[in-house]
Length: 212
Image 1 (tube, rainbow, N blue to C red):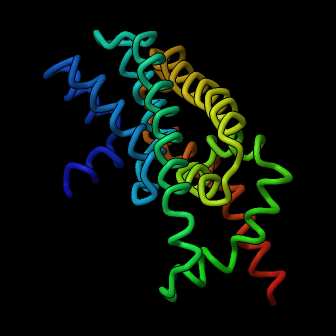
Image 2 (tube, helix red, strand yellow):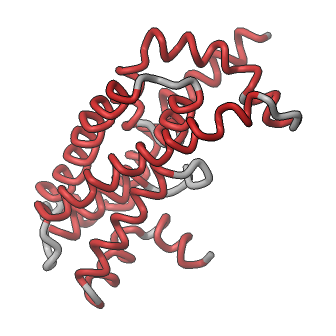
């Protein structure tokens, strides 16, 4: 547990330690984090955006090759979404028939609205959902439940993965050697989390106000 906390709170230091020990393991480790965050609904807390930025920063000053990493992480992001979509599709009928109170309240009761949402915004949701923590973990799962067309899902998944990974990883790589960035990395990491969470928080506040 302490290891996860260390990775989330001190991502750059944790990555530097891993790269110093074994570069190959660093590639595998980063691949698995992105795969888990996007592939399983129980891992929405993993630091996707911050991890990508940190990986770029670390790649700028270590043996970690940013271009190899770019390909590896895009593959991880695509596979994660496809896995999540497949799980949602396989479990869809069971979830619809479930008598569990929590599943009924938070999933089944919202499926009609979810279906309408994907019918209207499916492609855009899959692409732009990549840039929002927590949301990106659940979008492919619900896309599988409501059976979004697979060819459309895979196409938008690839576009979203390439855009998301490239933006944060290369941003970290190209600005990572700037002295101000090095000295204020913690602040930048925190700002990334806050900025990417703003749309979600705004949506929740709007929903609470509308209910009142």
